[in-house]
Image (cartoon, rainbow, N blue to C red):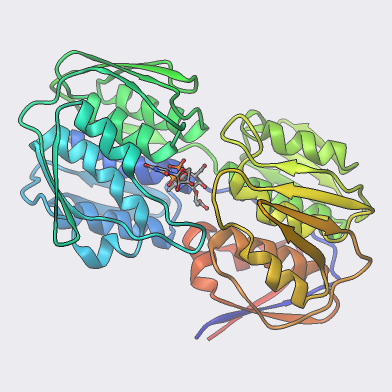
Length: 416
Ligand code: EPZ
């Protein structure tokens, strides 16, 4: 089993470049199924999850080739409607192939995705939206068997602004007859990037990034070249690591507007940074105030940065309350941080974090990719060398993380 050895105590100094966004490129790869013409994605991060999503659409008949940070996709011959169980079970995000496949072929068979460490993660709102567009859904031995002779535009109100449900419905509606309006839609930047991509292929989507999205169905989608937006969660993770070690780091390829709630909290905590043309430069001094965090859907504080920020707060001055409102079980990193000396108490959906002067190395395990980032952050500031297991989770969402952190002075080594 591979693990990371991270030795604390070094300042992080230098420049770190953020890769393309995992949570944008995954639905965009699925949306490529709408077109039969060649597509090129630039700044497509080379991640495990991207490999799995690429294998999923290849299993349906598409071709996918990686050339450095470019992905070349061609979905001319889509001749299979069933995504393989062993791929879908690896990554629940594969569920977003339902929308485009229904739009393209009128049929899809996919195993009902399981939950994962952070929650049961049902897909009821995905299915409700697709049924509203005219899909017939049957459960058959753990597989969802979905048919839709012709999808018709309609008005859909989402009970909760689910990112995946908004994406699935948007992609199905993109080729439906007539216009669809999604109300209470997710507003994440990755939704906007997906809508821009579909429009570049000939789609007619308006309002992405707001809570009301209008989608006028079109029949034909042509090829395109699209540059994936930078990964705001990766950027935030590195900004927080630099703050925690007291480093001087320029985080390049960042859209500050996508990180507003995080930058606001960093400012409130007294972390020094400024936005430059090339990115965000952070001059941490390792000394910052405790701040309360409450995760919300965008444009609120992102749930994906709750774990890294909580890890930072374990060394702040004072007591912080961190409340997780999006997922029901997203504090697994707390037990691991407590093994390193952190003083955290869970009360319902909140964690009460008492800032403490120092953390120390201990063998810990990452339970999901963002918990993994939190453990790396803690280990970079702890005394001694921390062993982190479960690094396959981390490598799902952070491209070349060990190389990137090493290049700015962090002592991090991967051992098999
Ligand atoms: C996306 O997951 C992201 N994943 C997640 O990032 C991110 O945490 C999440 O959005 C919230 O921002 C990708 O984009 C691949 P949701 P998604 O549907 O679409 C419940 C990471 O670390 N729900 O907005 O699954 C669900 O259980 C990952 O990169 C239903 O109950 O998120 C959750 O509690 C983790 N029924 C909440 O809503 C549904 O039909 C938000 O889920 C759908 C969701």
